[in-house]
Image (cartoon, rainbow, N blue to C red; front, side, top):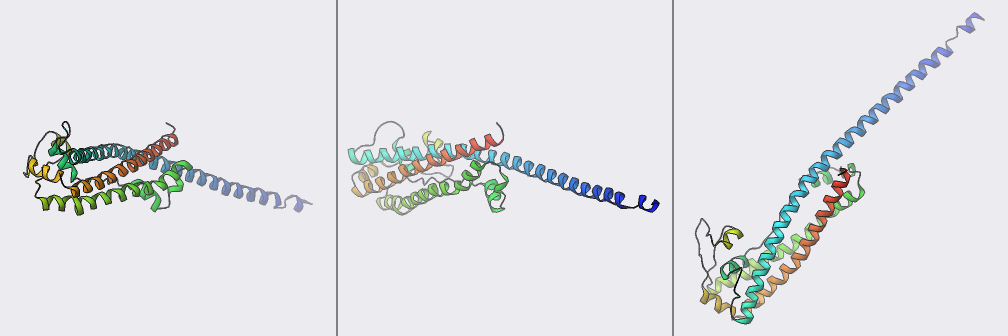
Length: 245
């Protein structure tokens, strides 16, 4: 009977229970640590995305302004072709002729977003809406890029060759602000276009056709830029919501 009382069964059971509890506790601690690491990674990713898309917001606003400036300049040149005289007011003829040959393009980049997608860590973001919008961002950017690539082709293949053939001198400015202030490029260049040469091309139907093609492309690019700006604002809203702001 004494041997039965001292049987190791209860002690072994206690030891086994202690081992199981220790293992489960270790798993729980590890899971909690992993969850902490995931949430830390998510917050750092969100902060990076916030800075990135805030930068996009500023860049897109400036890019849209340039697109509209070129579009207004081309519209005034079209008016000159149809009415025989360049409209008074801003932009002047020199600025309009300079803007005509500016193939504005946007290069936003996207290091944080690209890194999340290429590494397969996009799922670390808990917001389904944010994941969805980030995944679709490239498609909206590609629409703008396609339009702008077409604009580059129009400028390089139609506008510049035509003006060169016609012997039309073009003003050279370092920026749109310098153009508006009539500040020349540091490298030098024509400060004023040749009114006689301009008047000659205003009467040429080929020039009008080129301008109309350029204007149609710019108008379509404006709508695509508006869609990109709206997509960026939606992403920023989803980021702020994920950050609890």
